[in-house]
Image 1 (spheres, rainbow, N blue to C red):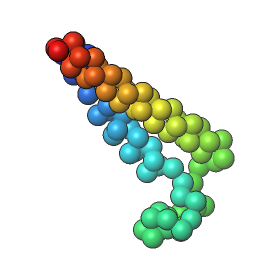
Image 2 (image 1 turned 90 degrees about the horizontal axis):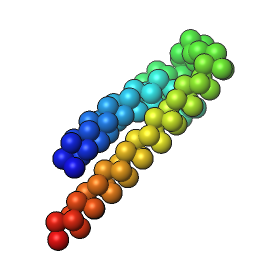
Image 3 (image 1 turned 60 degrees about the vertical axis):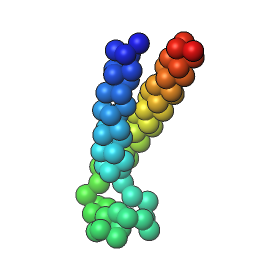
Image 4 (image 1 turned 45 degrees about the vertical axis):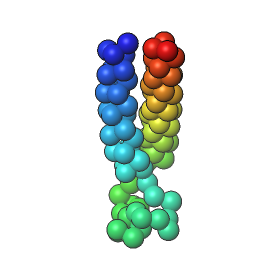
Length: 85
């Protein structure tokens, strides 16, 4: 059970870093932090529409994996504490 907890914690950490990087790579829609730091000037340098859609899909998949990993970790903790009682 301890190995599963450590594995899930490592997976959550890796997915967290990947989520942050993918969110930062996505194009800002305007009016947010990306425009405040000069994101509005680089709109012509962004990738094509298909690459942007694929980046969004990858971001959503990584976030869903992150959520499922956290739910799995919570279930492991829950069943571990009930097994000890």
